[in-house]
Length: 195
Ligand code: SF4
Image 1 (cartoon, rainbow, N blue to C red):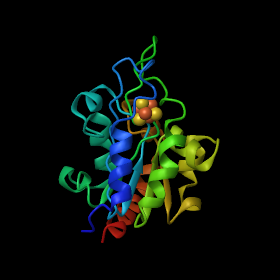
Image 2 (tube, rainbow, N blue to C red; image 1 turned 180 degrees about the vertical axis):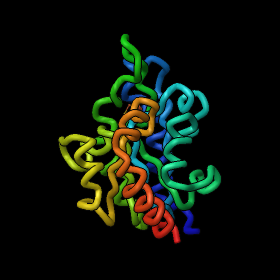
Image 3 (cartoon, rainbow, N blue to C red; image 1 turned 30 degrees about the horizontal axis):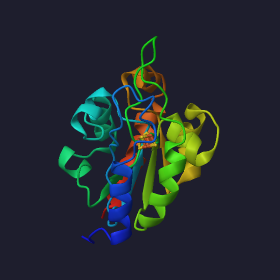
Image 4 (spheres, rainbow, N blue to C red; image 1 turned 180 degrees about the horizontal axis):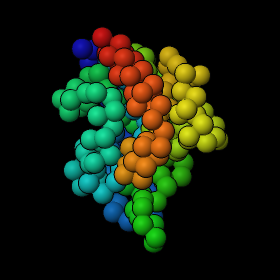
C-alpha cells in the first residue's frame, strides 16, 4: 500500500477543517469522505445522511448496505481505505427538506474539492457515479435512468448507478436488466479495479 503523500494529507486536513457552509448546514460542518493515494476504486455519492453524519462513516446506512450488495463486496472490503476512496458531491450533511428527504448537496462543495482531490488519486481505475448529483457533476445534465441503462457507454472508467436508497427499490423491480446486466458488470469491474 502506498502511503498518502504530503499533498494529499494536507488537502485532507484542509477539507476536514472546512467551515464554508457553516451558516446554512443545520448540523454544522462535518465533512465525511475518505481518500488514499493507493485507492483503485472511487465512489462519488450524493451527501451524508443523518446516520453518516452522526458516525462519520460514509455509507453507514441502509443505502450503503444496498450499494455493497450491488457491488458484491463485504463491509471489510468496502471500507478498505487503501483501495476504496469515497468522495461525495457534498461532503457534509445538508439537512432535510420540509416535505421529507435530504436537501441537495451543499452548492459549490464538489466544485471546490473534487478538482483538487482527483489529481492526487492517480491510481483510480473505476469511478462509480452514484445518483443524479454525481452523474450531473461529472457527465453534465442528463437523466439518471437513461445513463444507467446506457452504462456501457461510460466504461471502463466510469459507471453510473442509481442512488441506492429505498426510493429506487421500485425502479429496480421495474427494470430487471439492472440486476441481469448491470450488476454482473459492476461486480466484475470492482474485482478488476482492485485486483
Ligand atoms: S459542504 Fe463542503 S464546502 Fe460546505 S462546509 Fe462541508 S466541506 Fe465545506
